[in-house]
Each structure stands twice: as C-alpha cells, then as structure tokens.
Image (tube, rainbow, N blue to C red):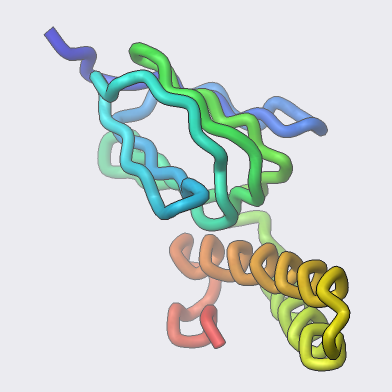
Length: 146
C-alpha cells in the first residue's frame, strides 16, 4: 500500500527551513520541474533555480529555490538548497531592482564570458524570486516576468 503523504525537509547552509508532512511536492530540477507524490521512486537530482512548492490539504506554499540538490526517499523528500526563501518573505522591489541591475550588467558584459555568466545567474536568481512571489500572490503575474 502506498503512503498517504511525504515528509518534506528543506535545509540551507544557514538554517533548517522546514520539516512538514505534505501531500505533494514540486521542485525545480536542473532540466525542468519534478512533481513528487507519495510512493515516488527514490532519486537524487540537482536542484535548479525556480519555485519550489508543496501542497498540504488545500493549502499550497511557495519558496524560491536557488540551486542545490533534492533527494527522494521512501516517504521523504529532502531539499538541500544553496539558498531558499519563503515566497511570502520575498522583498519584491529588491528582486525587481536586482533583475534590472543584472540585465544592465549583462548588456555591458561584452565578450567577457565570466561577466556574462555572473550576470545571467543573477538574473535567474532574481527571476526565481519574482516568480515565487507571483505564485504566492505578492505580485501580479503580469508584472512578475519582464
């Protein structure tokens, strides 16, 4: 018989963010989003940048996940994130400012590959934060993605 729920644990280098019994988890993998239900096959994968979400009953919670790893074990999902932020705690104006600054740096980077990579990563981080905030209802979806 399949389990009815999963234990979700989210940990960053700075803190233990969450330990919750949930119904469903969606994580941003390096190659796209992965949905994880109870009974999912074990796996270990690299975490991309994007919105991590979980459902518990009718409630959905959102986080901005910024790299790391996810491990799925029987009845348990462990997210070891480089950085992770609850969507409701995201400073939307700061994320927008970071996105615009990174766009400017990318436009001025010329042919310097390391500068392009840094600016592109900064854009991805800011966009992941804005997307998570948008899904949590903090910012209208039409203004989250520019």
